[in-house]
Image (spheres, protein in one colour):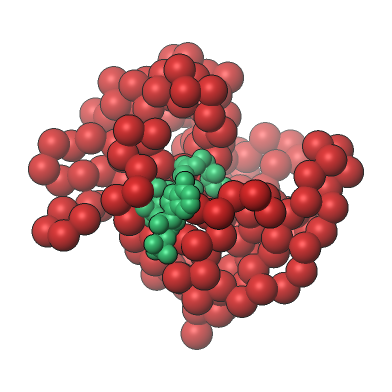
Length: 178
Ligand SMILES: CC(C)(COP(=O)(O)OP(=O)(O)OC[C@H]1O[C@@H](n2cnc3c(N)ncnc32)[C@H](O)[C@@H]1OP(=O)(O)O)[C@@H](O)C(=O)NCCC(=O)NCCS
């Protein structure tokens, strides 16, 4: 990814076609849309934009959800949305055990270019700005790409836990920000 400028930005309507294309690429690939909030079930990017904005604030986040900030990772050269990353502002019982503070994904056609590692590093100042001293990041035990992304961002292994609903084993890592 030498010389490739990337930016994390809040989602805007300017990117609606890119957001729809991002979603479609994951559907076509049958892949997991981590760190995109409700994108999988929202075919209309305008609906998703409204939902992510509502989720950002404790007053408007849907009942039972944790307020969270959604970012697009945009490549400067062609304005393509190459990744998405979401920061949950605090941990409820489920997130504290399994989900963690952060979710992320990179568009299938844009993988193995270092974008996930870049995104996780680039979101740290925002995490600090909302008062997080350490962030919990988790991955499935068979997700080598995500584990490497976490480790190269300073992730300290905490534990491997069993998530009974999906019957999955999840590795937990803490990244200390201070
Ligand atoms: C996980 C994911 C975000 C990685 O994105 P990416 O941009 O391809 O990752 P990077 O290029 O930054 O690579 C990160 C590390 O993983 C390694 N890696 C990437 N893809 C890999 C693969 N398929 N198998 C093994 N290692 C892989 C890279 O070599 C790199 O390691 P290194 O720095 O030690 O060389 C992407 O595969 C994805 O979106 N997956 C679906 C959603 C998901 O699993 N999100 C994470 C939920 S915890």
